[in-house]
Length: 298
Length: 301
Image (tube, rainbow over all chains, first blue to last red; front, side):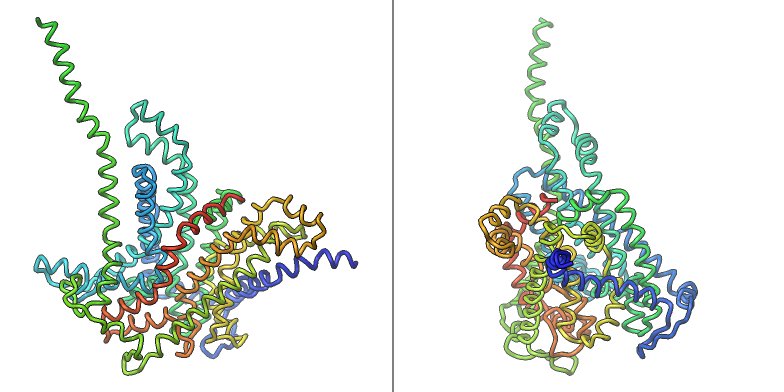
């Protein structure tokens, strides 16, 4: 008995705080979200069970179709920019620019938006899209004597997709460049001796080598895009009206602006389930090992 | 005669063709530089604008500074008025941000190192399950859980306290940190620990004097990562902090940005620059070691 206690003591002390934090801020919240989704809790914080009322409300919500459409557009196009542009950046900085210092400079610059605090990064975009003649786009228009445009009102979806796309592209860039770097150089020499065209080098050597990282980046980014709303919140706050509202932001608005915690939780629950399905797929496709390795690169 | 002309023509043809083919071969590389240059330019320009605008009285075309001024930096010694109310001093916000980030770093390193070591070296029941859980949590979209986290903080009486947000932030990051630290410990050979134990040191002493120093660079990198992520944190602080006494730089800047009556890019860029200063410093001075460690951290898995 004594030795068993001794055997347990060390891991318990070492893992105690870790497990406690995970329990308190991961497991408990998951359980709470599931329960809350079936209540109509409001700012009074009273537990009143309402059965499936929240989910019925969701189906009848007049804004929900618009919001689902926005979410699909936002996630789809941002993902496209993340993966495609990240891939282009990866190829350009590792394969086409072989001088390491030069490509390091480019990669460093692309990391800047990712390193900047979100509030500062969004300020740059707010200035870029500023409705007055001082904004970047509008001062360019002024050069051609065109009237300033209220970009964030006219094209809110484009704005949030661009802002998130650029941040995500640098994530893709890092993963893809390290994958391309790990391709044996001999392959490229052999290809150029054989007179292979640039296109066939990309198609037959590079793309097969980044196939797994490509899948990984896609799913990883999908998971973070579908639930995160920090940049959208700062840039347009879902507006004007519901023009750039996405599901995750809607859940936040319902809970923290309208104080409909129950309804907000129900929306969150839908998101968590979508995310879990994709996590599960990621697990299945990559296997634990691959996921462990890739997740460290960031 | 005919027979002689032909080879000659072939030779000149091949001579003229050679530079063309070289040009053709280089073309993709020129395009590569071009594409990179064009797409990277706006990013550089945006950050240059931040610097110029903070020292300029007025910007021509929104980009070219007209005259130099320190007016925008006045927030450093006077409190900024906005929307009829006065914002707390920038130094309150700076102190809070600093406190938040440094405590986050210490908590994360302490808990991460302990958990990382246990996961890497100690055999205990449920180890495999705990490792898998850690990995899943790493990818788990924790933002979706914030409504429940709000309820928990409220229940614990930690709403509107920096400590409460600190706990949440630590919890959200600890799976990743512990996992990375575990990788560092995996790289330390067992023999090193054995040698210490045989020499008669206790396990704790071996850990403190031999193993920990070996993963110092890793700990440094993890510390910088968590400090910067604490410094940049916005959403959690915005959600769970309401009183002005607990304001941080992120919320300070966001308050200024979200005020529709105050569109003063001079002030906004000066505050942003002030806020970004530690990020820039870390970025310049520790980038190499950060890159090395984050690349090396992946090896041990």
